[in-house]
Image (cartoon, rainbow, N blue to C red; front, side, top):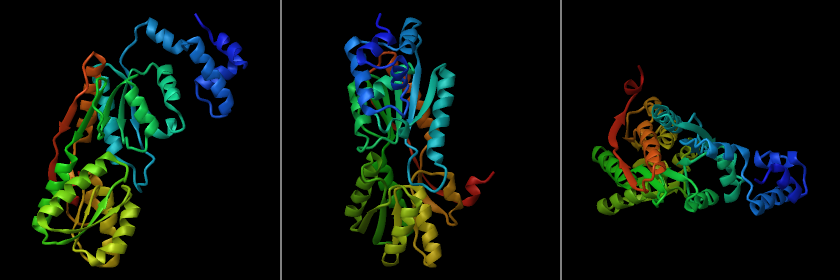
Length: 329
């Protein structure tokens, strides 16, 4: 069997250097990493952590990947619910789950990601916050090396499932219900992340409604940022009748901007987070059960790891109006 000593000799480095590369130490030059990784590939080296996991037939270890590096001005309630739902279901099923933030793997290429997850005996991935910008992560999913469940992103394949609400339908429905209560023709629509799959679907629903009702809609990207939504509202709201946002955090930013400007415009959100209750006004929004979505994602990943094939799972949503008394206990 090939040992770490063999890899060090082939690469012309110390054994400790090979260990640093395997464990992704930050103070290793790219040239050294390339030498070590080339030696690993050529020799077919399998780290001890993987070998021991394979020999003991340990199964069921999964990683929950979360993108928390987003421009929000409050703790991200949505991702905390994802984490809680996933951990609780994994515990129920006797699965070992770890949380990995996108920033931890942002500088890795596909091969480095594979080695990183294999070194921790990971067999399956649940990915939250995946967008078109995450090209290396996208190639990892397509490689089929790991069973994968994507939350709020497309990509169904033999080893990959997708779980989400119907974002286009939900945006269409909540905006239509909102406009029934507010007679408005000129709308500021604050979309989410330009490269995000969720944003694209929600925008599609908004455009469908605009075409049906003959609305004049100004579309701007708020990047799911409360601060950016505030800026856009300050700039464009005086000439508009209403503001529809692709997230509740952006809706809160818009509402606070309107209060500061001392003008009234009805505001609609999306997601159903409890912070909406503190915005000062009752607002229409879409309620998602993020804990349930994450719980079902773990169930689905378990099914894939037992030999199932990928599928598209659409979860239910509700149209609600959130006010302060709804969120206090």
